[in-house]
Amino acid sequence: MSSPTTAARIRSIDVLRGLTILVMVFVNELAGVSGMPQWAKHMPGSADGMSFVDVVFPAFLFIVGMSIPFAIKNRLSKGDTMGKVVWHIVFRTLGLLVLGLFMVNAEGGYNEEKMLIPIPAWSLLFYLFVILIWKVYYSENKVYVYTMKGIGVAGLIALYFLYKGGENGDEGMKIHWWGILGLIGWAYFFAAIIYLLTKDKLIWMFTAIAACIVFYVLGKTPGLEGSFFSAHSGHAIHTSLVLCGLTLSTIFFGKRYGKWSFRAKYERALAYGLALAVAAFILHYFYPISKIGATPPWALYCSAICTVLYMIIYLIVDIKQQYKWTGFLQPAASNPLLTYIIPFIIGSAIWLSGVEVIPAAWKVGAAGVVWSIAFSFLVLGISYLLTKWKLRLQL
Image 1 (cartoon, rainbow, N blue to C red):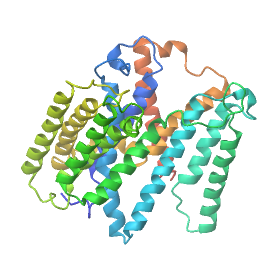
Image 2: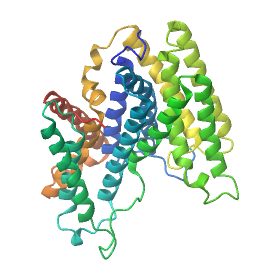
Image 3: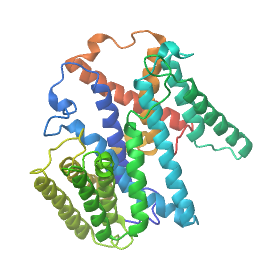
Image 4: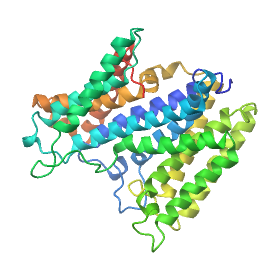
């Protein structure tokens, strides 16, 4: 198995990413299905527990962490300076924050009557401009490329000022919350910077994970309500999830540890996953398991689950070389941003048309589950075609 400094891609990481995106599309569609049991929905904020749905978002954060060493080392191997790498991290973070901000404001808080265009049309234009900005251009004509990106940037600015919110329509876009992509952006930023500082040393990564949990604990300490720690405790826990994935990636492929035997990697990975689960078990005595609350037990249990899941995938795909069955996941694995926004584009287009494309009977019970599965694979198919037609998005 080659190290991350030489490998173009690691199949097992791609498979985990593809599976995560596929399940994310499925659960997002399933959220609109009525008559589902609690285990098929997000647990409410007041509950102490989690469903499989509550593992999807942390799984994506985990896989973001697993990919960070490859992305950074790839840039350094191409001759980028540390300053350029940091700038790329900042630019990528800003992109995710912008995406999250626009998507959240398209979901609610708007005053459509005061806007010049319907909100679904506003959303479709937003996705068009996103594609223009973050599309991978294969043309060597830089004037054309920068013109397209410039149109996209100008379009987003225009949409920002077109947006009207509040009861009287006198408010603009607001940070109600950062949205899924925005939360990923913050967690990615802090974890990537921490990785640059830790320099592939596991002991410092473990320390960083512990520091995130201490940050959360301080935010929940009596007397610190409303403090900096309290306001950003969720970001700390989300960052810990990325760091957990980053740590597992380092155990398997890090420069210092990549030469370990398969057995040694598995023993250490298993010990790592067990340590995460034990830490979650202990912390559960003090804090609930809650995705909504972004609590340490939830994050650590999810990281333990992802660790075991990755170990299984790594064994099957990279060691046993049984990877032909994973081909259907390739679009989501190699083009995740496009795959993620396709359902939102479809939803906005249907909303704008005013036509009930999906029968109401398909949104209830078992029929809703079947539809959600079918829709997920439809999205994969569209992503495959668009990727084949060289429409690839990259932050």
